[in-house]
Amino acid sequence: MNILKFIETFTDDSIMNSTGSRRDSFSQFGNISKNLALASIPFGLSALANKAIAKDITPTPATPIGALQFALTLEYLENEFYAMALDSGVIPALENGGRDLKVFQQIAAHESSHVKFLIAGLGGPGSANFVAKPTFDFTVGGTFDPFHDYPTFLALAQAFEDTGVRAYKGQAANLITTPDLLTAALQIHSVEARHASEVRRLRSLKGWISNADRGTGMPPATQAVYDGEGVTTQAGFNTAAAFGASAGSEAYDEPLTTQQVVNIANIFIV
Image (cartoon, rainbow, N blue to C red; front, side, top):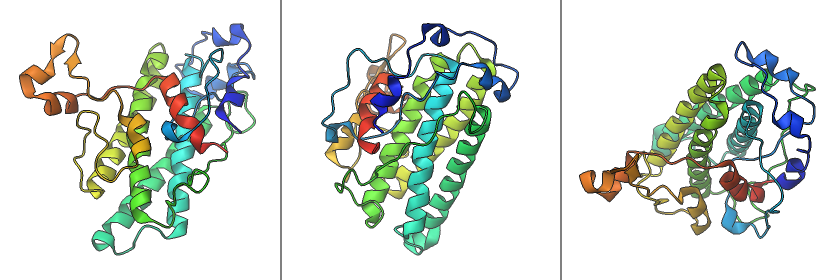
């Protein structure tokens, strides 16, 4: 199902404006109406998608529940991607002395834990806030072959992780009114950032993003993941003048808005 079909379910303004307290525990998520549903997928390669985003459709509502549903779908995608890669055998068992396989086994375990955590937090399957996993196509209709070609797998893993870090960051404002949920999201966000750094190092790159450079060997379509990362002015301070453009941009990660993520996302949903 295309992401836009999910977004069309947001029709009740009273639900979108719900402000009940959810700070005590994730079990309280079930108090939101059944009409609050999935509205965004946080990964993809937008330049490959010849699909227009309807201008009158609003992405994920700017609520704590919407942010957590957003995060769950992000984790669904990563979890399935790594599980399929491990099942396929595309990750060489002897690469770097077996280190690569161990790294992705651990990353996969992290993503599985994140999925279970967020599902429980949203009330579990059958709850009003639960969102089911979409059907993903990581080959993009045969354009890529990540489960038979290891460099392609690594390139997409980098794009997924780098996008995930920016997407989580972009949801902070939607969680600011619920500090406990913001804390939980930041705990996951920092782990995703560690994943991104490790995957980049497996590709012999820096562990951080320099300017808006996607790195060598990346499909041109992945540029959408890195657009905007070259910002060097932070809170009025010109970091480029003080440290140079590369170092100035590397010291700060820029968030992706929900709409930017939605624009990137459609290609991976069947």
